[in-house]
Image (cartoon, rainbow, N blue to C red; front, side, top):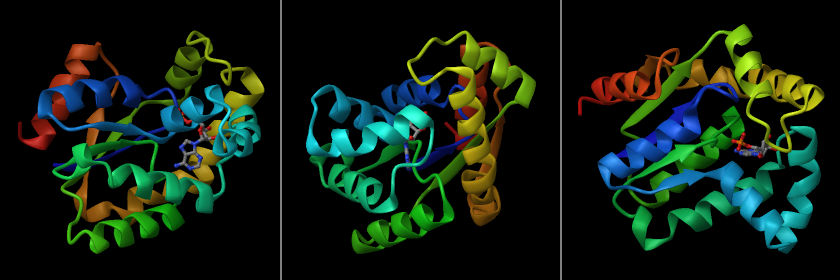
Length: 181
Ligand code: AMP
């Protein structure tokens, strides 16, 4: 299966993506993790991306799209994948459509993890990641509202919404159910 996960920062996408990947036997592809890995290894891409992660802004599309296109070429992604954190804008969604078309394929499902804003703030403040300071969190939420939320309309036809308030296992069960697994 080829799946995209949507939802604001702090909705639990990463954890659910990992569990889904394990269950479905497909790789979990997180653009945030790929950027952080490049930053830790001080690659050229990492050096360019760092300032955007530090402020919570989107890394420019040229860098991000190339990163994803390269990752989709890896053998483990040939039969399916879970994309977590990409696409984050309509422009990226159009790029993804082209990447899939070039591989003669399309998405099977888009899952939206839905959480209220207050719950999100509470969760993010207790997570303790380097880019989880209040200013950066608020900026990432604004970027989500302005850039990413339009994807909920863009993917209207294939969108399945999961109530992301509940225990890890409860939310996971809901995700599997909407995927028909
Ligand atoms: P995440 O781990 O998904 O919360 O992403 C952390 C940060 O990585 C974001 O705040 C962005 O700076 C950057 N990032 C991750 N995915 C993307 C993307 N698809 N497009 C642009 N920037 C991204």
